[in-house]
Length: 345
Image: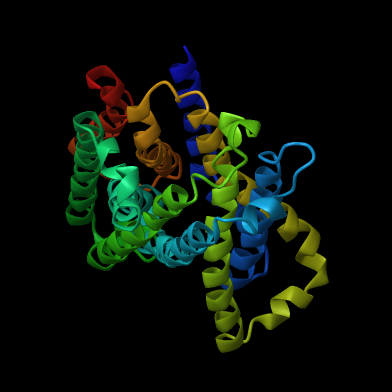
């Protein structure tokens, strides 16, 4: 029962993340770089900070964690957060050229597979005594493989969509649709985004041991990763403000109330995925396989829900019934990938 509860919590977080771009459409009279960094203040700084505080028992503070004997792990966690930030930037571009459904599918699919594998591999390089590679069991590898198969099937549906629609129909669904360019960017975004899970692996011991409930133990590491990502995004966005002369966006007092509200909502929905991941893992402790695969499961479910939104936003409008059938098969494979490891583990 605990396992089902854990997977359900992760699924809720995935649904929230897949919905985070909806409130962004309500932001008025701001350039992309302006609203992106403002929502990032909520998504990558304030909300993760509040989440991390839940991991701190009475009589202790976060400073104790971040100034203790974990300096190397802390630096590595932030470093991979910086690298993840690059993935976050290119992630947005992948949706610009492929749409919400296809862009998230390819980027998050690559992120799911590589993020799951890279974490234990890199941790083993620095701390071989931890035997992190032992977590990559047959069940885990099969879970990753099935997830990538599901992503591949959705990619085939995307290619079918690209070849079957006229340029006018493509532009009607996704204004800047460009499959080759979008595919390249989405793969890069997925590779770099996988660094998020690597950061979590390096930071998984940054908590107060038994004093921190299992469901909150990854939240301090999540804060460090998002902090690194915020630095990357802030540098890029402020550079774009200067390049595009959009510093004036922040002076438009008439839209601040509206934009701040929807940036907060977007940031909260985005952070929900990793808050839900932490809570969900607290219920998966009896299954080492699902603990290792939890990040992969989160990304797979993100893809499922992003495609649901893609259908709602009519990004697949005009496609043949065969293309839609292939898309649905890919979604079903991803759903199966969330439960299969537990059945064979």
